[in-house]
Image 1 (cartoon, rainbow, N blue to C red):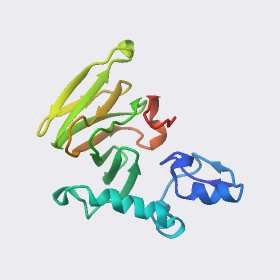
Image 2 (image 1 turned 90 degrees about the vertical axis):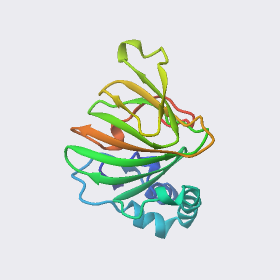
Image 3 (image 1 turned 135 degrees about the horizontal axis):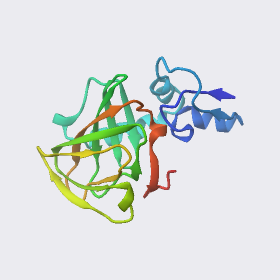
Length: 189
C-alpha cells in the first residue's frame, strides 16, 4: 500500500504506474504534506513522461516560460506552473494550447481569479442554480474574471495562439481533490 496526501489524484501521480505494475494500492488524503516527490520520481522512474513534458514546454513562447516555480504539472490541455503556495492562497500560471479546454468544474473550498496575460479565453462561469445554462464570455489579454466558490466554470482556448493566464486561488484548501468535474474532454473524473 502506498499512502499519499491529496495534492493530486492517485492516477495522476508518477508513482501510479509503478504501483500498478506491482499491484500496490494507492490511498489518498493521509497525513500532512511536507514536500512533493512527484517531480523527482517523474524524472527517474518514467523518462517518457519527462520527454512529453519537455516537448510541451518547447511550444510555450519563451517569454512566458517559467524558470522559478514550486511545481510544474502536465495536463491534457498543456501545462501549469505553481509559483506560490501558502495556507491562504495559491498562484499558478496556466498555459492552454489552442483548441483545448479545461473540464467544467467547481470547488468547495476556494474561489479563483483569472488574469489573461496572452491570448484570449472563452470563460464559462455558472451559478450553481443555473448550472445547465452556458454563460460564455471572452476575456482578452489584460482583462480578468472572478470565479466564486461553488460556481461551475470552464476555460477554453478557441484561438490559434497559446493562452497564458495567471490563476490566483484564495480560500481554505487548494489541493487537486477539491476539483469536482461535471464534464471533461479527457474523461477525467
